[in-house]
Image (tube, rainbow, N blue to C red; front, side, top):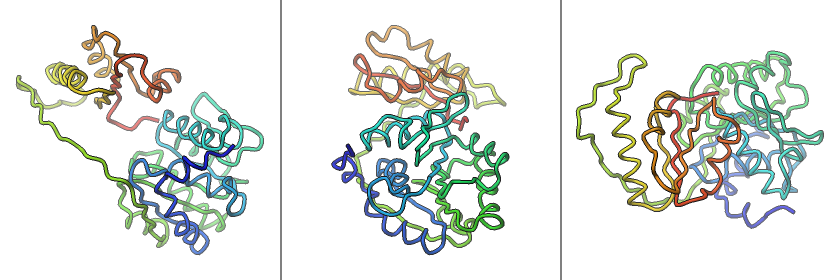
Length: 292
């Protein structure tokens, strides 16, 4: 059963008519929507016609990371009252959960790039959504270029949507041949900024080397955050090595789960980040650079 109450609570719903009109008129659109508005989950379902409105289409959603691809597919399936692999599926490196009748498939940009190299026309796909398009990396830029070339030379009916909360909307509009920019309004939440400088001098990074004093300071700030606030902590670090070193310094936190999240982490660990913690909170060190 479709969870209409949850769908109606997503602010991006108000932008759907404008997005649909833009795609029907130009075939391309840029969607700017703040985090939490539903651009990743509600928009693909609506474009696929899975909410009982509009024609049925097959939609491919490209995400920059595997954890985002799996989470988006599972959330969309939940909104439909299903499990991933039914109307909504996902494909990431080493894992494919896609049913025969899937109308929405969430993939990583790396997977989509490989698919374009095998099948330049993307046969059977009606709409491609480039989610989080502000995250610039080689796979994403190459996919965008390939998709535009496919639309210009092979499949002018292929619809393209570039979506993000913080992207250069006008720049993407020019890249997509003068696409219309559609903006969604979101709810504002209070943000408190706390300045927590290191008591010891920290040397600037040199190549791939990060000063151990910075990692020690990060671990200290995480401990402080967990002590002063209820809930979870998300900590960004430069790479896998730095994640492991900070996690090693966060021992003895009692019931707090320390999860190391990066592209090499097992799927179960990446998925656990989105699940409620078993204790008083969770700390999620993750890379600050985009990983496929």
